[in-house]
Length: 275
Image 1 (cartoon, helix red, strand yellow):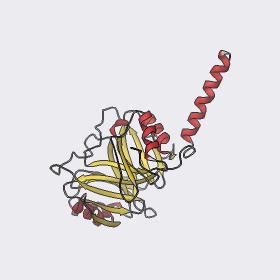
Image 2 (cartoon, one colour):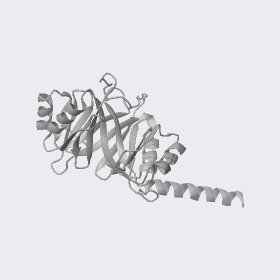
Image 3 (cartoon, helix red, strand yellow):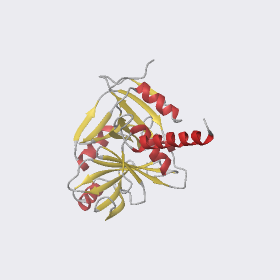
Image 4 (cartoon, helix red, strand yellow):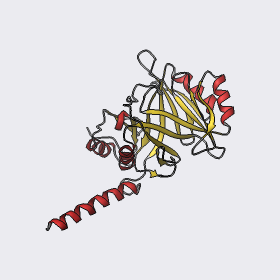
């Protein structure tokens, strides 16, 4: 093979790889966003708090002391933070800066949150993807954004702060699929949709802290492949799982820390990793 033919073949292979990355779902199928998970001193009280604030289906109980305000497109889940109940606030330098929920009226939502003990981080203002937004800190230090959109409900997005947003975008598309929208962020951030929940990715210069053990500890995906296959794929990208365990009645679980220390939980009904 001549040098020119070899170079041409290499360029074709690179182009094919990029095509697979940016054409979501071709290789692996679509992943589904499942939840955000918060560390709090009292999981049931926090689940009640979020249910009162933003509605949804309240779920509390279980041996692990967890709760959830279940939204139509994913859960706002809570777990007891051992050993002393405290966790670093998510808005103080964590790779997962905040998550968002849709509301009919941002001003009313802010006043309700204020009356329930939240700190108003940013008063209502003009938004990028919706008409108005506001940021609050819940009583346990998690930053949440209100998005005013009467036609939408439930979770809106999870927002990451990373040192190289292009690399992290490409990694998410490679690992989880998704639909990349180059216009949504207005040049300020990358945006990838998983159904009707988005991952937003901003670039910052400072080194951000891993999200694990902060008040906004992790978020989750359900994948259309076995955990064994998924574990091999993420390990090949430099992010091996640190825990895989069965979760009766059939949705086995895996946890790992991805780019920038973003903590992610994976569920799969296709099966667990083999022992």
